[in-house]
Image (cartoon, rainbow, N blue to C red; front, side):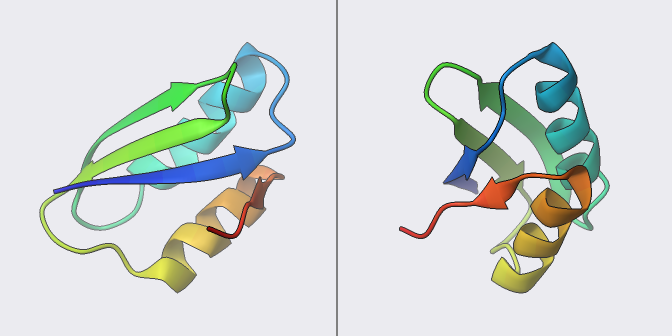
Length: 68
């Protein structure tokens, strides 16, 4: 299952790595792709993602999850 989010505040490769690492650590996540230019983050997972867990992971990385 793929879910796309918008993350604000990312400006460089370090940002991409930080967000990717936090999201990859969530249970069920199999892949994370970050498009720095658009702020789009696509998470591939084995099932539906827990919105609170995604928000917490992005926050832990130091960035903000934009509201849809």
